[in-house]
Amino acid sequence: MGVFSRLSDIINSNLNAMLDKAEDPEKIARLIIQEMEDCLVEVRSAAARSMADKKEYERDILTLEQSRLDWSSKAELAVEKGREDLARGALAAKQRAEKEIEGRRLALKAIEEVGVKRTDDLEKLQAKLDEAKTKLRALIVRREAAEQRIQMRSRIEVNKVDEAMRRYAQVERKVDEMEAYADLINVGERGLEAQFQELAAEESIEKELAELKRRRSGGSAPTPASRRTRAAGEGEGS
Image (cartoon, rainbow, N blue to C red):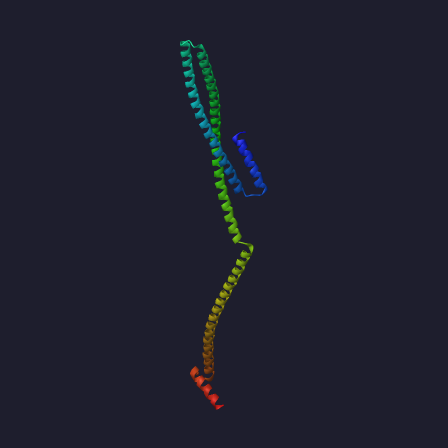
């Protein structure tokens, strides 16, 4: 099973469980990132083990190659000394070393192929992890923006708006009353001025009336002061 198929199975199982519980998207995104990070650590650990195995096999091959050379030299020495039995034994040991070398080389080739695939998996998984983290940051920004909108709108509730409008209506009525009071003050000032105008008009009428009386009687017209003196005397006589 590939690393991505196994990771997909793990994420899907946990994702379905969280969806069943109606968890929020941010938690789901964090879970996916956590699973990817855990898988990345596991793949890196496996890659490290492969590197260690590769080095071990390379050391084994060097040791076996040296052993093969040694047995080859011993076989030549045995033949030189006329010891064919020892030469046969040395050649058998040499062949065993060659088989071990061939086996180590096949294993080393397989380890190298797996290492290439794991390196590719690591690069792809790291890219996916970076993408998931970027999306998580964007998700957090969107969530914070949505929370701010909710808070702002919750502060402007309908009842609060109605209360504000009621207070505004009270203020508006107060302003209307102040304007009406100002109009009354202006009316009073105009009334006082009108009284003085009426008083001046009455004075003019009195003068004109006195002039008419004077012309009819052929005498001088009484002044306002003499009229007031005469009126006072008439009041005392009565």
